[in-house]
Structures are given as C-alpha cells and as structure tokens.
Image (cartoon, rainbow, N blue to C red):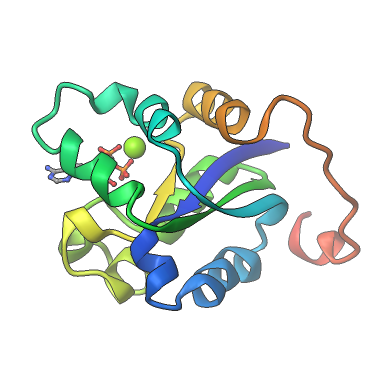
Length: 148
Ligand code: DAT
Ligand code: MG
C-alpha cells in the first residue's frame, strides 16, 4: 500500500484547523499510520526543503515552517500520494479548486496550510526524515467498505 508524508503547516495549527483538515483526509479514506505535533528545528526544515534551496522564496519558506508547531503525519492508501495532494489542492490557494483544503482555507501561496509528498521517491525520503524507517501499519475494520 502506498504511503505519503503530509504536514499541517504553522498557519493551520495556529488557526485551529488541525481537526478540520485531518478530518478531510480521514473521511476520504486515507489511513493515518503516524502522527505528531512538533516545533520544526531549523536543520529539519532545511533538509525537508533542500530541493527549493535556490528559489527566491526559500528563506521565507523556512521562516514560515519554523514559526510555530506543525502536525506531521504519514497517510496510507492506494495512490495515497495523489489522493493526499488532490485533497489539498494546487500550491497556490487562489488557483486551487473549491472543496480542496487550500482553496477552502487559504488566500496566498506563502500560507497554504499543508504539505504533501509529490512522488514515490520524495515520499520515501520525507517519511524517513520525519519518522525514521520503521513504521507499522494497522488493520482498519472499515477498509472493506472503502477499498474494493
Ligand atoms: P507544493 O507544496 O504544492 O508541493 P512546491 O513543492 O512547489 O509546492 O513548493 C513548496 C512550498 O513552497 C509551497 O507549498 C509554497 C512555497 N512556494 C512555492 N512556490 C512559491 C512561490 N512562487 N512563491 C512563494 N512561495 C512558494
Ligand atoms: Mg512540493
């Protein structure tokens, strides 16, 4: 089963949207197999966003992500990476489809509430970075009503 790393960024936490946002992933059928709230150390933020190091928005992004606690989680399901990203909507909230998290709660690209891994390689890297290499899954009794 595919896994993806999802983070609720500091704006989501500060605005009291943790429950609302997690609920959307949960209701869709993605299974939470790891979950924690933490203040992101500078070194972790830099590793997580290393791919954007040369971008003009990099410094602001690091400041944003270390500005308050985040909620980090691993979600599991068939096509979990794509399912999580489509639940979030595209990067810029004003371009995101209504009904997605970023459109429903966001106005600017620099405060877009959530992060989701963008591919299999990224997902493996991010899960290992945030949670280490050994994550157990669990049996969800509802699965036969969600997954064929
Ligand atoms: P995504 O988070 O949708 O995968 P990304 O990986 O391209 O998007 O960028 C990572 C984050 O960086 C994104 O969530 C918000 C910020 N960002 C991206 N492009 C930006 C831009 N042009 N201006 C300001 N922030 C930007
Ligand atoms: Mg990305």
